[in-house]
Length: 296
Image 1 (cartoon, rainbow, N blue to C red):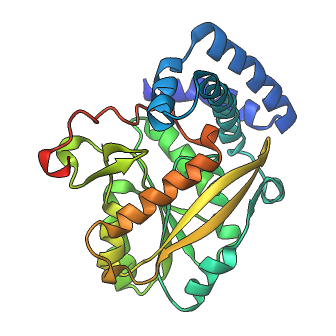
Image 2 (tube, one colour; image 1 turned 120 degrees about the vertical axis):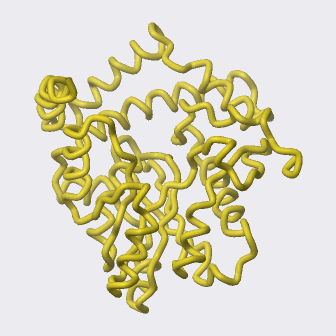
Image 3 (tube, rainbow, N blue to C red; image 1 turned 90 degrees about the horizontal axis):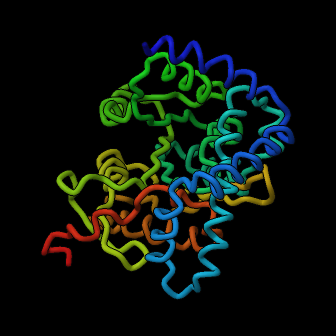
């Protein structure tokens, strides 16, 4: 069954991926109108997230952000499809990096690096990182149930030089590289909401207590990784700029959860700049009524 689904979907995605961006954006506009005004896909979830995050904003302001989010979200889907065939020339023009010299300076010093980030703007096109960074780059991914889609997606994300590894293999993979003295940077998107029973730490995110992942902090301390945040902002439709922000190059000097706090605060500040670019379609605050007593 998995192969049949793949065999049906693959030709469609392949054809769409080879269309010019202007055509994909025309399709995006029609899909947006259908999804937002007819189906109403996750409109309630998005508005609830926005109301909780920005209680100072009026209903009209929140509706405006919501509409902008959905327009961007459909664009992102089209851009993710385009990623399967996008060329180096195209992505170099559409996805630029403001200050790669920050990362490259640590790479030249022989440091290993944790590149932390959030599901903001267009994170899929960050697979172009090897084009501007002078270091091996590994990206963690979650295993898909359909192995055919997983293999195709992994090959696509690796075409510019990113080396994919399963999230469950992260510690073993980094340890292996360390043992082999293989210097690398590791992409770790860290804004997902973990299950409460798997959570070690809760903290405020937009003034609401939420469970947060501490894996990036744990890895940075265990392997002495320089922690650098990367945030992507939209310049205009189809064009993005990514900025690198140093969190620390001495992770072992930080007390427990200080790195996680710094990352979470930085993510929140970056979201406020362009709130419509964050992935609001997930229930970001679904565990807010499950906060353990010690974190209340």
